[in-house]
Length: 215
Image 1 (cartoon, rainbow, N blue to C red):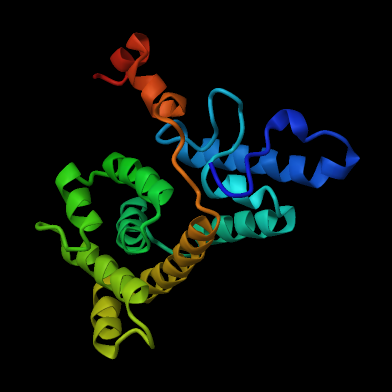
Image 2 (cartoon, one colour):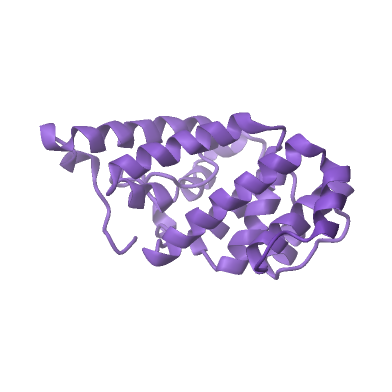
């Protein structure tokens, strides 16, 4: 699943693992609250964390800081879940991060993006029919993810007029967070969970749950 290996919950015992166990439990609570069963953050078969959280578990101090930054970004400004998905898809498509694209595709669908929108974003292009706010989020994220040097004055001025200062500030900080996440997922080669070990696959195969969500 990554170059450092997965740390299973059963191994997080003893006083020497107390910090690791604490951040494991904090990640589990946060992910359950934010993502539920939209995508796999923890393997059903073993309970081990997946994705970036599995990597950060090997460096508990960084894991705690990463979680604190995640929580701070959620409170920073009026950046919607849809805008976050657009930003993440624009950046992860450029970075070619399989787990990030897998997770953000499912999050994007849950926030009203269509499969066609996501396919176009994967291709590094602007989907047809995006409103002005969606377009601003896309172009700011794309420029920050694809280009070097300062964000162009033209993009800054247009995004500021379209999104407002608070949302633009939140977007730029969020894009930086995504770039950091993408970089360490690339470095540690974070892989996708096996299809049979994904929570959304289990959910789709459970008739009672399919009925409950109207499938």
